[in-house]
Image 1 (cartoon, rainbow, N blue to C red):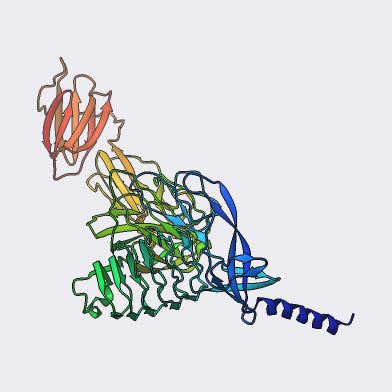
Image 2: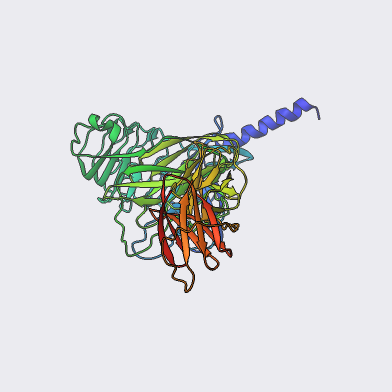
Length: 596
């Protein structure tokens, strides 16, 4: 058959398919895999029948409500609601456990982390051999449905009128990093959440400009609402426990507005003239730009003020949102070496701040979280830190985002340099010295595995200069008996905490002295029986003589610092010392003061 005829037949066949699908509701079965929550790796695959209106010209699909089928015909008027076999599993750990959820997680370890797994709205479908992008949730689509938690993809651009009316959706769990109305949505229909009595938290994406009438009519009075940065007008009644705004200017409100607490961004607070008593939220970084070497952990500290959930300190609340492969961290008490299907990490602990870290280049992250610590915490403000490291050089950014209703955010810029970083300094050289001795030591900055760092320059310092001193080249001079700590610190500004200390042990030298003739200048009696010892001083020398062998001789300065120690089997000895000083000579159990 000629090629042009084949093409013509294919065009006709495709036209028939689209002619059938255009302006016609179709049912498409979509298989999804879910992970059962709490201490389980069991996976469950479900097949859900979704209903769509297809646009063959744009190849876009709109989710619509289910229709009843009878004798091959589909009812057009609203006749039934979605009843999902997987409305959203809930793992219960203990009472007062706050919630952490995720979209479908393909695998995770068997440790008792608590996970919510939400029902995933399809982002694309295939019908008649053609792929369609799901870009809209139509009017009444989820009316009266039984879903609790939904993961709505970022390609959804519009949500129709009464789309979730009367449904059982909870909205967002406390620690959810997702939105029911993602930032991709530009139009939120009239009465979208009307009579959603179970909904406790809702966040409106940053590209919605108008909140239409009836949006929150009949909702749970305990509802928390965040209005995104693009919201300019609110044309419905709002009755909520807590409301957070994100826009630069105060939205125009046309309706009754009641909220126990109102939160506004600190940088735009002056624009909210109608909310003079509103609380201001923020995340302030100690430094918003950091530099490091590859695989070098860096600590970023910040202050966070935003709404905190009530937490019962009796329980050890833990939640993790792992997302990447990273190595065990010494002292962290937790580790993971498996991959997850998102790009955010969440902290853990009852007294820890709830925030997540969002990475632009997740595959380049070497170490993404350890313990997220909170300290100096008040009711609404606390100091925190996190640790980050990257696998290879480059320029990156990541964000801190609060997981409470404010979604307070701060961005960190990172520059990663090529080379091995220094975490400590090690030394080469014998640490045993004698008074008056000098020895050169070598300091080597290394990483935790002992690999020499890119930069090897150090500064030297003696922490006990009365015992030993050190110069800029690592030459140590022993001055007196005792122990001295010699510190070397890397000069690399990217490794300011890389240092090490060396303990020098200084002892007095033992000398073998020759027998000499001593003058008869006795200064005292020896405590040894029948042994008379005399000591004389002349021209920088001490001369000792005795009727028996001298034995142990010790010479001290007046402040008690030992200058010399020697043993002599001879009956006389001569010791050279600096002049212009007074010494105490101890020998034969007797102390004698001598001036030179």
